[in-house]
Length: 478
Ligand code: ADP
Ligand code: MG
Image (cartoon, rainbow, N blue to C red; front, side):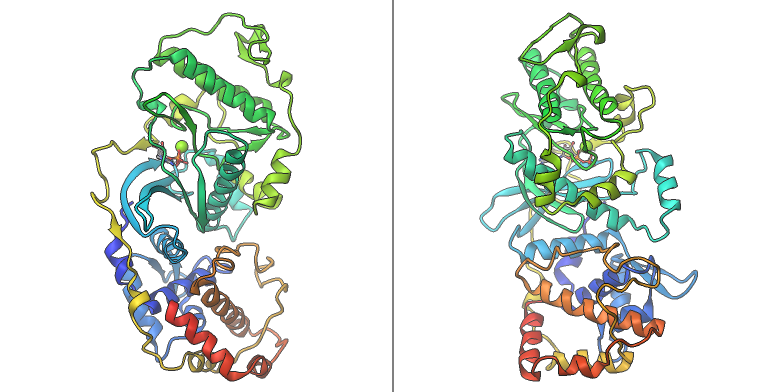
């Protein structure tokens, strides 16, 4: 998927305001009614329609008038929101070429202000339904308000949390740098996926290291579940780095043994095919791990000593909750569908590609992201007026924070950006909070819900001048 960075650089703050409004509307609507976008964004004099036309032109939103006049974010629109937040946070300042096309992701090089090159992974669940298509559909049938962007955000959050925890436990994984929405930023691995390696100096050593990794993961309470030649990178010194974690599960998972055996089998199969090495011999008690002679020298899942609690404790602390885990597991349970217990080889081939070093799919050089809206001064002299005006026109009513929405869901259960923006210390957080409030009011007003507070109580909160300056400060950053 091409990232049109020119569009990103020249989008105005109103463009981002409306884009954010569409994102917020998507918490409750698959297609956000145009009127709701307008109410949340709160631009003057039909300004929102003009902006929406611009966003449509750049394919950042999709227009759907099948049921009513409405919009939804496209992946590109979601990309822009995530990238903008990360640029504002100072995580990176330029985007370079695409270095990988995963099954359900796009990977780009990005560069920090000081020139350090990192990798940015944009999750795109739903793009290629390679994994458990049937169970996905079953799952989605029972979940009317599903949304691919939400699932991609969960996948990114999970990947980031696992990468961080694994790194802290000395596993050879990329360093987790930051995460926003469906986007994970990590260190760049200077190597190639094992699938591209035709020759190794020490295939036995590399093989042992890789099998040792699956075993050590299990000892730490985890199954990779997509452990194969596409997700292992090898550098010039034949050092191994493991990538791609959204499908990992706990050893306590009901299918843990099957996943473990499948991960191990993938590696055995690949090494035997590619390097023509047979590992059938018995090797009891090698490296302290029992190898089961009945399973042709494969490490035995049941004999691995697990240190309990790793997943729960560390990952809950990192912000990826048990609920998130359950939610995403329903969707991408354990990677490729286990058909014959060793299908990963065939399933993956041809579906996961990596851009060749000189086959640049996007751009040849880093494109600096001096976002236009950071320089353009607000054309509005008083943003508080805009908010107030918007509230007037919405006949604003306030919905209690934890009141379930009309769809029967808790307000935050399909939260696209969750608290990602709340702690980034940039103007984004304030704007998102404010737009969020407007969204709640607008949704309530549009649905004619019983007022729980009047707009006067909103007006009365805080002095007008402090409120005013806060908004102006936030808008000048935005
Ligand atoms: P998917 O989940 O879609 O399979 P992956 O995380 O496996 O995505 O990444 C796809 C490809 O992108 C990898 O095979 C690899 O070539 C490249 N890639 C991913 N992460 C990095 C990284 N940190 N550094 C360098 N290349 C990477
Ligand atoms: Mg992969």
